[in-house]
Image (cartoon, rainbow, N blue to C red):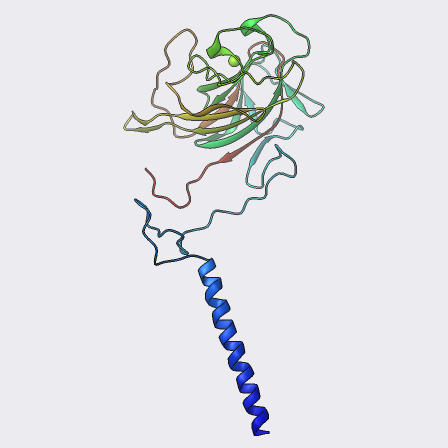
Length: 268
Ligand code: MG
């Protein structure tokens, strides 16, 4: 019995040692606190105390809304929107279509820094040219336009073609599909910051069209204008996303937006 007891003790000791070693290696996997401090940050390199980003479930398919997105249009209704003009837009067969003359459409919710996904299609029937063919627009904070235009074999001024930051920056490429085909914008927008009515940080936009980079954190010169120089004016920190009625029946679908939060670094 005494020998058996000793054997059990030895087994327990081996198990405890193994557990201690295993436990230590798990802790190392979770980070180090004997490493240098990251410059300007309250964290070590591989700091185990650094907060983890939130878990987000991506959309089931490419372009699908992730779990933390606000779905602005899911093909069914305009409950997230209000007209800024005289009428509403058409909802049919899973898409939203500009009703020429109805006026712009604005989100009820207001936004600051965002990631935005929008799909759009220029009218199948080709009418007009240059700025009068398939023109609409996505106005971030109701002020900063990412141009929507049928730019498939339709010359116009470079800072007015599809994907242009209108009147300021042409896109880095013309990656438009044919009229009637669905196209996707993926946009990251950093809102401008004002202090006591003065601009302290301009707006930035990163834009992809159909997966092709059009703007890489491009600084905006100010609010979009036509035939004039853009300039900033004091504005609220958050404002509505606006879709433009430019008198042409452009279609939209699958519109979702994510508010971009800073979770682990000091605000600058
Ligand atoms: Mg436009």
